[in-house]
Image (tube, rainbow, N blue to C red; front, top):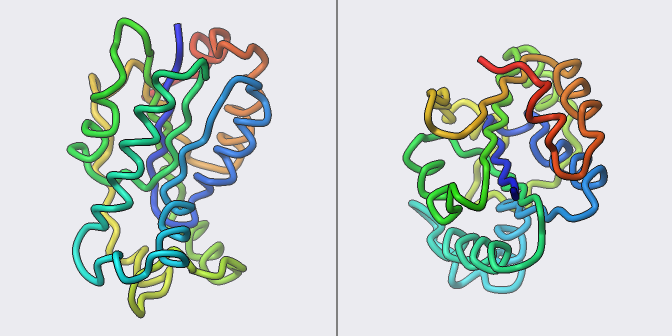
Length: 186
């Protein structure tokens, strides 16, 4: 069975780093990262990017990439986004048939002090940000709707960098079977 893994969490929680590290451990995996798409659109098509409201072009591009990934031979699809609302997460996971894909939500529920420290020491250039906002402003506006039972086949809550490391250490089988069985969830 194939796997779709969806990250959840605020800016600077480590979702992108996690996705890259996980993909390195899984040879037949693909990361779909909306920050990369936002950067691409802002750099190459800035006139098409809305200044307010949802970035529909970015969301449409994500949908197209998901469709391509589903029809490919990629075993594990890693969707790397903030995914703050249940409705948005459901829309992202809807295309993945439960008869073909099992789903894992990886919730980065790190302490605020950890995020604040990362924001203070960030070296990210912010190219994916629209408007005059800073990462700190984005973090202050983000409100994560905690995942609930039934949103995915498995929900993994990471509360520390040690939890992240433990999760990644369990990735020893390219099919994620051992990880799926071994990691505790809330």
